[in-house]
View 1 (cartoon, rainbow, N blue to C red):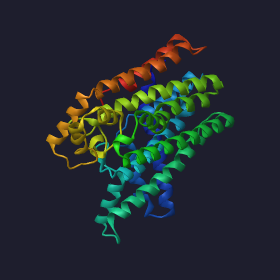
View 2: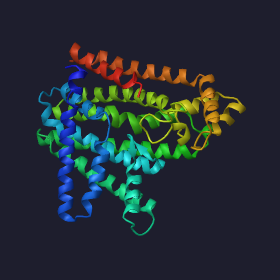
View 3: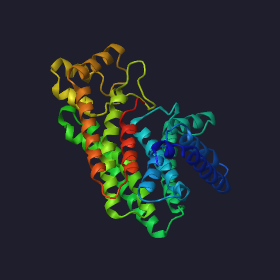
View 4: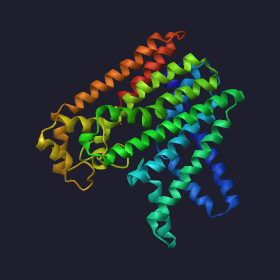
Length: 357
């Protein structure tokens, strides 16, 4: 099976996800007519854009684990989208993001709803409170979807254990990311950045989707473990690529995200490497932009020049190459894997890292 065949399942995932969320909108309406508009907004947020790549990676893991009928694990593929949704909802609240996937973040949309209906209290507090709670609700939806897979109960139990581990690691990564953002840049090491990338992004983006699919297929422990190792390597490279794209340009300022990584003050490998290798003037130029959404175009360009001149872009590209090579090495030595499946895994590595958005 080629990656193209798996990606062709995206419309089916989209339909299943939409129907599932509409089912819950109807159920909420049965409890109270006031709840349905809130859940409908969260449904729109979830279905708005998104590549569904994590969902497709679960299907790939199912195939690589020996599964044949992808429809049996379609609910689990959709589960990764509800998981992604509640992570983004909470992340946007933490980052004070205003846009996501070409529209307002959920807490902003809920604040506007508050204003439109002239409700009491503060609109911003209302928006954040409703968004956080909707995110919590989507966590329950994720478990619901995993339980709907048409595979033996023992496999679902194994998938739920992996899901718990994935959620814990992602939360630990988020804690470190928030902590690092409040620390002086010169106190943050490149190793610490890579730990955050592994915990917060690589595991839930690539490693656990592959492992969840393999577990639902009933794959042996060695196969599941190897797919996780491959996923962590490819997933780290994916996040490093995301960091490069997240810097963008002054005109773009974002790549489908809430804002630019520099303006958010994110401690990425680019910024940390540049800070440690820049002189005093370079650090001052970076400092004027990091965490400052009001930075001028001229200040932004100066910061980009520092990143370029310190070799930070090249350094990130080298780290991406090393991570992909690490994953490919595991692919090559994985026993019992045919040439087409090795090619599929390599295709996944390329798709994750050689992208422009």
